Amino acid sequence: MATTEAAKFKKSDLIPIPQPPDYHPEITVSPAHDGLHFWQFMIAGSIAGMVEHMAMFPIDTIKTRMQVLGSCPIKSVGLRQALQSILKSDGPAGLYRGIGAMGLGAGPAHAVYFSVYEMCKEAFSRQHPNNPVAHAAAGVFATVASDAVFTPMDMVKQRLQLGSGSPYKGVFDCVRTVLKEEGFGAFYASYRTTILMNAPFTAVHFATYEAAKRGLLGVSPDIAGDERLVVHATAGAAAGALAAAVTTPLDVVKTQLQCQELMEQTPLK
Picture: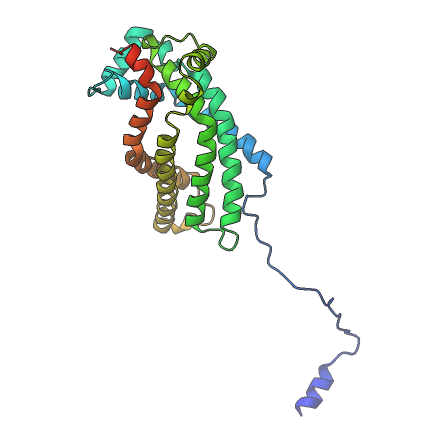
């Protein structure tokens, strides 16, 4: 009976189309690097880094002055004292002294950071694209590479940020003077400390960012599909705050190393 019914409903004009022997249907997965080429990451990262650092440059100047004000031994200096010291000695323009060095260093350094990060992320998380450990490891490798590019200009920037306590007329005068009086090694005096600071900063930042993002998406599952800007911004702020709190002591050491020669010659007041 079953055979009869099958024969009844079988249409002879429906001819099955054979598949090629090497046909294997696959699910298309988005590339790990968002479909951009590495040169595009370099340009985007360079622009993002320059905008970020230059927009926050006055705050960075105050931070640097707080870390070195009073010379050695280091005195406790608050935000108001540091700001008053800058405005009194150099005026509002003092908040932007050294921004040229920041621009010269931040662009290439962030281009290196984002390109190395994307290459390492793709290599480390080939089987698990959402693995936060692989992302953190890629971030550490990117940090080591970008700090090698940025550290010399960071040293110049911080010496210029000392304002009236700095004898340099500008970026190139500082580079020329340091090379002549202290040698090339002075540009990398804080490199090891910078790595020790930025490597855990990156690891803590990525781990916290992923955890905070998952938590926020868990609280509001209705936005899990598109992950709105507020989620990324909030998670990024929490990650940055925690990472900065963990690594600030080493940041003070880095600043002292970069400015030690200048502080011995011209103590700041």
